[in-house]
Image (cartoon, rainbow, N blue to C red):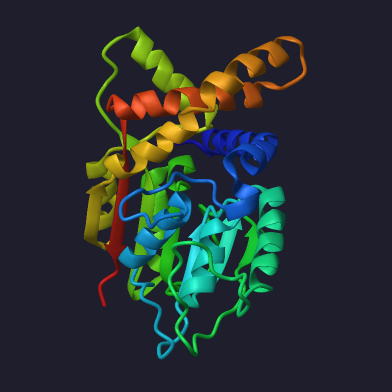
Amino acid sequence: MSDNAGRAIKDRVRNYFEDTTRDYLKWYGTRRHHHMHYGFDRDLPPGGSPTSNMTRYLATLAGLFPADPSRPAPKVFDAGCGMGGSSILLARETGAQCFGANLVEMHARIAQAFAVRDAAKWGTPNESAPGAPAVPAGLRRVSARFLANDYTTPAFKPASFDVIWALESFCYAPDKEAWIHTMAPLLKPGGRLVLADGCSGRPPANRAEARAFELFLKGWAVPHFCSFDQIQKWARSAGLEVTHAEDITPDVLPHARKIFRLGPIILPWRKMLHALGLVNEEKLLNAYAIYHQYPTLKRGLWRYGAFCFRKPG
């Protein structure tokens, strides 16, 4: 991929998130739980948050759970951190030292504000949310830190991190193979790269399916998906061991359906407002993605995968 093509993809991603920030804060609940990704319904406790449950599931794959006060605080690079949901939870519940990088400066600022607000609750009755594990006594914790930077080319020294975390950010990397090869050297020996994201599924059976899938990807500024096999092949070629590779689509579908329920409400309004010049194209496309993401996932046009790769040593 040319440098110009890569920059164009990153610019589109940046524009999408800048223009839809209020959608996430208002409609998706990010102001409350700080997450911007799909939820995970497997073993979801009563009253628990599906999005937080996804983070805890991946943290278990990464070896961050159960938290251990006797070990040095693991260092985590949250690559494409959104508004900070994963890093904030990991800092609070595992004691990890989390560093989040984001293409969108506004999101990095919001994430930092959320992190400060969350840390102020530590050790108080307001700290625990439904379904959250008890924090072990003696666990040292520091608030997560965030910066606006290109998470695909971070300027860290080799062997800087115990965990590199990519929760629905891998899909936005222009060159996904190059991204994995860039991340691998940043892991310490024994470190883990954890990745959860959409993956390619079956080909569209007709024009209607092709159009729905196109609107889904375009609406969320995703340049393309790659396959389960490609992701594992690239990890191995980067010198990483595949310790977990799972299709978790059945666990994501219930949350995708909840998101879809907003579609028939938001999409007609966005079409009308766009025709009147009152909302821009990014907001209209976001409504199309909300509408089409669940049917295309349910029909197998894409799948949702969770992976953990370990650096030998």
